[in-house]
Length: 148
Image (cartoon, one colour):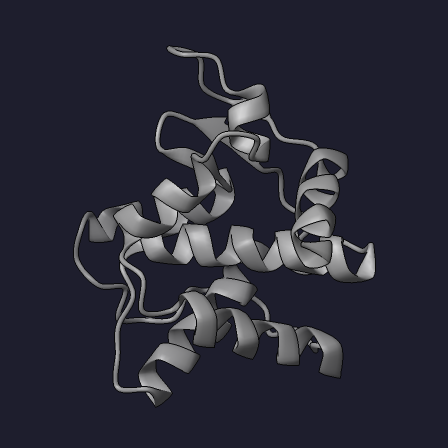
């Protein structure tokens, strides 16, 4: 399992290689989606950080606090985090997630994670933040998507 900020850095680098930039919301959602697909396809978590249900969807608080200073602007600099080693399946998954979801706006990604039946939808309670979204619920959801 990895620090969510390290996974965010990989997405920042992938976007840079593609001539693009990502907003904080895009980064938060891409890391969450990659984590979900890792759980759904391989049964193992990608990140070790807690995921919570907030008003605008699933949030990884540690990552949110690292990028919130950018507000709605692009995250230009990589985040200050210890470099980690990705196994080939993880690197491939990040590239695939970026290729599929990387051009979708933060709001668009948020809408994807808000759909009926998603892990966020199953646990979110209006007006309450910091509700944990368990890996079990995320894994169940993405596993079902992988079989659809």
